[in-house]
Image (tube, rainbow, N blue to C red):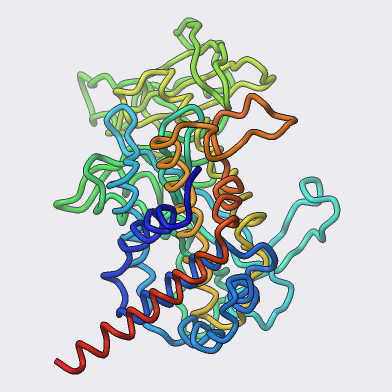
Length: 438
């Protein structure tokens, strides 16, 4: 059994990584906020999370910190990336894989800062209006290999439609944010980055800046979905006369892969939670998105359990077909992360109306999710699987803890954690007083 004090020491050790980015009182407020986000079982507002920890008398202090306190959001993101690099570095075939996607946080009022209207297909959400008001977040996180893979979020940017840009904000496209975020994680990583994303980001404005970095920066390779009508070209052959060729011969598009001079190959890989058989065709060629100087590997996969073929492309030429399909399938763990963010950590329960609380609340929720995942992985490594958590009756074969399992463990010691937080604040006041006296 994991006791309260050792568990608190583990939790505080994770939060200590963020101390350099705050003042001492600010860091204590940050610890209160993140811990309350985890311990709260109702709406994840500041009022509710402080009530859950029997710290309602500190409401005004934490509200002031959320609105006006010194809070370096980029610094918090960098600290999260460094923490993951230290505790659970994501490594796959010599790369550091990261997943990139965007998600909507629905907010109904037009008076909430930063909300925009977005079309949401009724076929996907039959009980919702076709046009919704929401915050649209572009989010990135590490993909840690395993069975299953683990998604650890660390970076996010809020996207605004140009026609609904808040006063004082500069318009940035989602693709611009994507490149900036990839460069940020690349600056903190010990190995090259492998960006894994869906077709929405498989365009020139994302991929070409990644493959052609500025001086002193590393190339960022990508694995992404390929359009079925993608423009592909063979390796060019030099002309004996006339102007040099820019592109080689046009090749059949992926939807016409039966015309490729490539044979089907059978294999297996860990895809969506289990070993699956698949067959694939592979083509080395040039892609209109990457340009006439960048060779890519294009794949057509027919995966067991799926009726439609998968069209994927990789700029990392050293990856095998098995590695490409596995890492792309692992991208879906980010969708699970969005589910946990919304259902477990209150993404759509945010009641902030102004800029800083909105941005900071999302950052705190991402930190809380990553710390819960890291804590669960460390407890499994030290105590063993299924020792500090139990699989439910309807899923006895469950092999790994969920975010909810870790929260349930922490909920057992909500009262003790409340005392530890009070002690932390008192010790902080003593440290500040001693520093002032000296």
